[in-house]
Length: 241
Image (cartoon, rainbow, N blue to C red; front, side, top):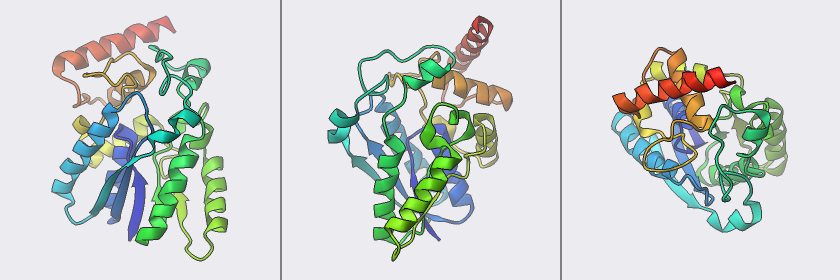
């Protein structure tokens, strides 16, 4: 079985890769540079794949960094691409909307489908999950179903399916699965700031800390001192809600 998956460099897409490898897929991996501010995730995607190859040398068929940065002028909006500040708090509807990149998943998945047809893969996977349901329309099961139908209609002679196996799972549940699969989370990056080390305070850092806390596990990306600080920040900001 051959599949294409999108690897951002974050915990969700990293867990998805291990989920597919555990099921025996031969995987073609795409990581996109769309001129996002947090390029750190691309560096970590490379590290993550190199580490994964040690465990699954025959199942990683290709990893490509795809430079689509020229489109940034067309879709540059929000805190992840422009100079807007990244919200340093738990997500609310308004702050999370600041992190939307217009039509991102539609664009990335369309490219992934074309690639799948080229390499003979029948499925394209991405890491949409339930925790993103409220604010990110392209992470909803309705979007997955509609896009899957559109891809089928647009490629009748070379059918490809769009799948998001985590679409009904929370971040906590994804990390739980990843811990069971022994995902090397120390090679994943979530922070939207993209600095030398995670800021521990942006919405995605707080969400990540929460997921590991709920699983009674330390985030291996962080040093002991950083993890202690992350937990302190998490509980302090929880009280401020």
